[in-house]
Length: 184
Image (cartoon, rainbow, N blue to C red; front, side, top):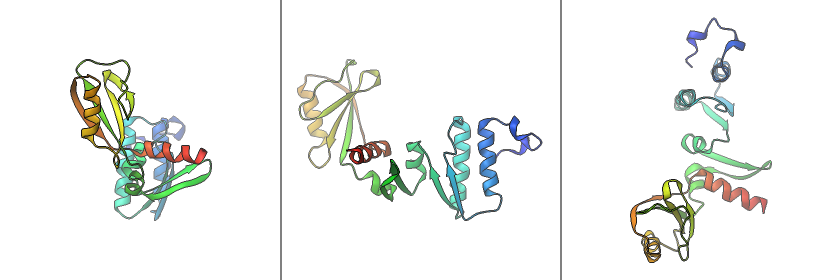
């Protein structure tokens, strides 16, 4: 875990990130078949986070089952085969990551207009949100509309399009959807 140069250091002299590495090393010293990690990257720098995840991925490839709790949804989406979403102590979903991501039938078209906008325009029949740099997103339901229909509606506003891209929902979108439904 990259702690060799700290072999003679006292634990209290280690940085927060190094202490987290040490905790993982201590948990792994007896080669357990299951490793439970509770927020292992909270408060650590980007480089340490990457190193820790590379190590955890390698452990998983070697057959170690990893149980991870995290608030970093990008990490969970990238690393986990199965995800449970807990809202106020209740499991509101527990499924393979790919299945969970398919729960939402929405996509975003991100439009960069020729002239940057400060406020997202109203596009008939669609929800819009401003994005940094003068772009905006248009959300549509995949079963009801298409990218072509979104572009036609954007063109109908009179805007000239410089560039577009599309985005599928991510785990954060699914999380918000599931937890807001549970709260309601």
